[in-house]
Image (cartoon, rainbow, N blue to C red; front, side, top):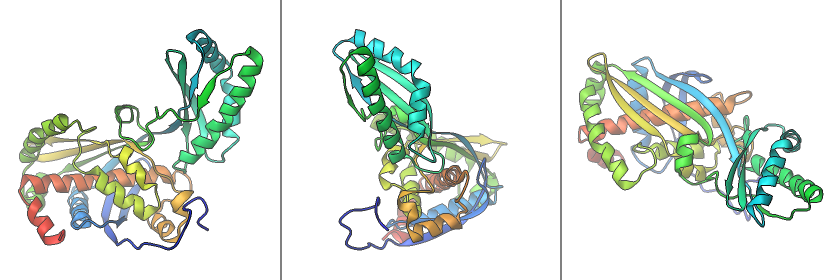
Length: 346
């Protein structure tokens, strides 16, 4: 049953799938070893990720920490003047419990956490923030917020006699867009990953030292600023796209989810600490493309079913992205980037 997944369906387009691994991870929800499914058309990607997995596996694996999970829908309400907008804002605060009950009634998975207000002249953005549990949550937050908005329009207008217009989405939550707000506040799961790589392994596998990695990163980092990049990662988007296609996620979310921050630090004389913070990983393990047989099988292979499985999946994704970042940084630092693509990417 493809209802809710696609319209005007005429067939399937096969995408090559690889497996990278084993990923060794010790996280808040993901613990153990995993073989990671990847759907990609880019040669070298699965090989490079596997190299990153091998390097970190030999250095006691990758640690991950799940920070939070929040997704919002942000309708905008427009009034004749800011005095009426102010009355409305106070009314929303007083009616929060009723609004929460109405929003929560639309879903088995999500829970409204709060409503943040952002006034601007005679309008106000009401950011309805949810915990979406095992769902990615874009539709969930839309349906829940829409029902709350209908209640608001009916109750506020009848009790105060004040007319207003509203739009269900102001795009303040930056759905499908890379933004500074997402970088700072996150959207979906926020996960941080780290790995302490032994110096002797760096020299043997990446053919470089911790000092060279740190120095190289300091030299390329200004390029991110000059280009106006949000975050400072090389290609988190590659890991996201390959894993999203393999596990039935909304591939368009790669746009907003690729705002990760990478850092390298020299530790213990010649070891390398690698860190990746990803404030926006919008994934789920129920609904949408996760219902497809192959994608469901990949989620089951990762053990990402049941309670807290979306958090576990987000940690696996962040760890995979870290491994891929580490491998690419090594290839660029040793001038092997072009040759590796000549060998595997053509």
